[in-house]
Length: 370
Image (tube, rainbow, N blue to C red; front, side, top):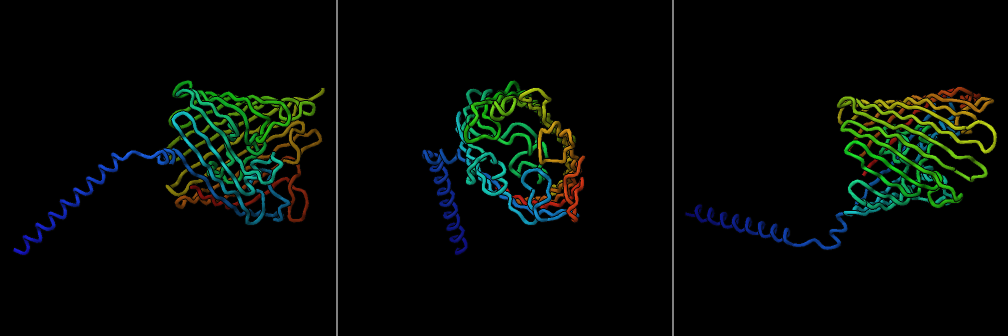
């Protein structure tokens, strides 16, 4: 008898609990979201924190010797950057505020005279139609394979083509979806990397044509215009091809090639640089992948100085091989890296402080993404 009473009691408790939960769910479904809840649901926050260790083999480790590329150029333990990206995505309009702090961020916005400059990107956008999107403000470049954020690159150190191409632009661009596979972009912008304002009263034009499939994409990019004071420099033209494909489930191949030419102010030959880089990558497991960046980079007619060794005609080139591993632990990625730079002219120093044509170095990057 006592067992039956207890059984009936538990049945009543179970029925009351189910009724309460059902009522609570119905109440929550019927309760309208507040304006604040709707606003917060459209706001996103993301970013990263990174640092690294770099060591030269058979060369001084006092910051006097390093590849002349951005970000991983200090010896010993060094800081990367803290990156915070705040975004708002409405039905038609939105904005992105991308802030950076630290040495990597300072290099990324190097054309600012203000050392406290922390803006990496700051733009608003309008989805005019399903096929046309307008972006107004400061945005990272559409040219090249690599990015400022270390979370977007497989290698931790960066290439010569990335370093000496444009990093960011301020202006107005229109992204156009031509079809499911084809896209285009047109832009009018300040001179490259002059993101706060335009001190020259000159503008550059940008364009892109893209082709995308499920296993990869290819983008042909252009920029043209005067990148400085009109009386001091001539117009610059750049054409750049960036492409990457999943050849198998685990093997990926990226390719970047670029050509830059600046016209002379008076009689003479144009100057600039060009290069090509391959990015094969192989994923061995869910946690580990390995890849190599092989780059050939050439300067002609003194198109760049203090980058690689140049001969008396202002010509020089460098070949770089960068072997990088990516080991993922949750949101943290460790990037051990071996890099060899070989120049056509003496440019680096050995341990005896004598000029040499090559430099070997090791980098261990640590990148946390949130």
